[in-house]
Image (cartoon, rainbow, N blue to C red):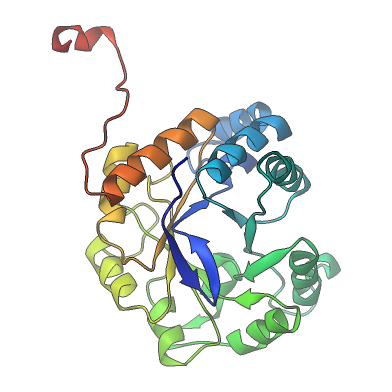
Amino acid sequence: MDTFPRTMVGGVSMPRMIIGTNWFRGYSHTSAAKDRFIKDYQSVDRVADIVTVFLEHGVDAIMGMPDPATEDACKIAEDRIGRGIIRVWTPSFNLLPGGSPDQEPERMFDICAQKGGTFCLPHQCVTDALVDRRAGVIRDLDLYTRMIRERGMIPGLSTHMPESVPYADKQGADVETYIQIYNAAGFLMQVEVDWVMRIIQSAQKPVMTIKPLAAGRLMPIVGLAYVWNTIRPIDMVTVGTTTADEARELIDVSLDLLSHQAPDFELQTTRSKKSLN
């Protein structure tokens, strides 16, 4: 059994690969039809099989929100392997008075803590709404990080904006890590890839990168090779998969890349490649 390389985040040992949940919950970033396919295809048992593969290789952290189906799948996988999963929750919540009582920050942080959250990073839709480019700060962030600490979780922030990380560093925000979108295609990124690379390289805290395969727009070998070779040893890569076989493939390719070996994996076979055999 291969044990995936690890790093330290806020005093917690973390695998450098994190299980993403978009492909469990139906967020394809492709089409409504693809979203429906994912939701119809996935089941608690199928997700449990995927999480089990990750746990078998030492990838014992998951990112997202604690929806019941994902939580049930994680508990099945934990029981199978006898190893707990580090939960990195990314809640969204009301930023103004008058919103739904179910979405108040205190309630959402309570849920994250009750569902075993080790880390709590307000979602991009919260963080980026608080970024003040004119003043160069993230407003009110300290209010939320204090609430997170009070509930025994480790605070961070999730962002798509390149400014969020340097602003948080500059203002000395009480965060231990950042979630930053990063992929070779520049998918959903607001500036050029090399700018985001420099931001990650300069961050004062470890960075959890997301969407390394640009939501399926990049082949695994392309997306993973770029990200693993341009982040720091303290940083992490979050990957989403639809099947257990995909999880094995991404783990194997990543381990080869991190060992500076050319990945040796089964290639796709089609009639058009018959002359290459």
